Length: 301
Ligand SMILES: [Zn+2]
Image (tube, rainbow, N blue to C red; front, side, top):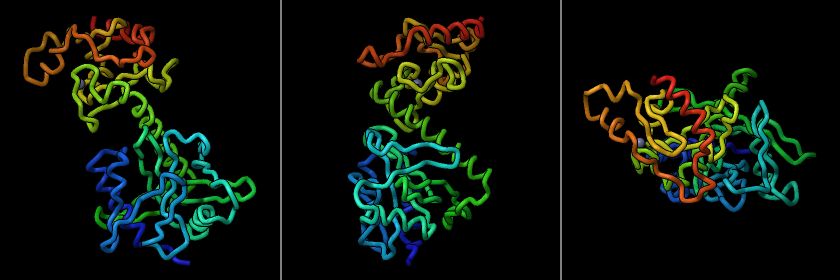
């Protein structure tokens, strides 16, 4: 059975380029162009079915990518310490889709796991591997490997060490959860910074009002605000705050400093109102803002 390593390498290299251009969460419009393999355009994934093999480019039988869209309820992927459990497609166990998935396990080939982070956006995690196949429960275990080597000759590697693999899985999950939180919050602010209104998604984050390690720090929309990187950093450092009545406050320390245009970017919004989501149910929770604002007031006193 063929492994199609050449097709996989082209696919990964193209995704490196797309992520550099569009950010980590790639819009479908960019993915839809596919990647170039020996002069031919090859699709990255099949959105209608979770499991995809590039029939025009591959000779081997194993899947090239799998995906879970943002809204997909049917195939709820399940996190474990070792990786993510991914369910077979409905239908016979040996239909096209399921046989591609199972061949990826037999051949131990690297593939791409596209994870929906907001409607129409996917975060590609690669190289991913199918480490276990459970035909009785009709599911596989996806684990994550590493790209190793010099930049233009990076090779996908499976991670054999148990602890290192768990560590990698944890990192991937953190990235994905953060991305999904971002995918929830940013659209509510029509992809703008709530403080300065910057509209450039590559420079926008979803900031937690209450930190995610604290009580009530859940990744829910009402615990989030869309902020550009500089305002996010300033917010996290309590140099800038948002009051429970949605007003920007700048710390006295910054207000008293005098120099430079970047400082004006921070100071200029003192006492201005933030951009709010149209829907009241998506606006920042005033109680959480109050808790956070108290901390700022103490820090800045
Ligand atoms: Zn900003």
